Length: 296
Image (tube, rainbow, N blue to C red):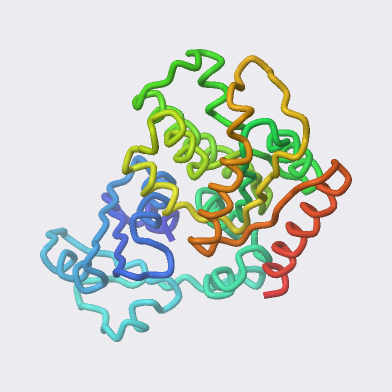
């Protein structure tokens, strides 16, 4: 629609409208549109279709061209105003309706706009105390499922700036973790494995600052969506790699994470035992998750 509109219009403005409780948050759809066409003016109306319509009626132009996506204007029960031209874009034989795509994005992956794919990527987070095999498992799972994984940003940060962390350092670590996750989601093939998440960052903050953590880290780790958590148990030898210093806190941290996952009713599997058992349990959990998506 945008390509056709650019042929017809001297000045093209894209309107994104959303209502509270929409299937996809309005700010997310606005981000997709604005970052796909950064050179165009894009307006987001949080008051829904009626707010966008009122803006259209107030906006002055010599001629207004309404780009109607497969009858959406009629769907909302509005007649075409006389000062609008209507461009109906029919579906090609190969095209899939947006309804079918939304009902099962995984089966119609190639039809998703590149910037929209990260929203539908199934994210699986590996969490646990230090030296429990999260990084190794995340990389191996990504290889097995032909996708990518997110490295733990806290390790990268501490390698560069040291272990004497302040509140501001934790803000950098949390923001860097989110940034890395979003960047790798652009490259992911339907599923993304995350070596740690902000729940782990929150609990590390509690270790460093006597139970305290910045409020936005709480907010962010409650807002992030993960399909499943793989909680790695500290029943393998602790290895001091120069960045680890809490061997005695491993059991406490494992229990703290487990209690958080249970209290929030988040789906998780405990990964324990030798490598063969860990691998078998992880594969079973991931296959179950992905199978439920494909068959839905």
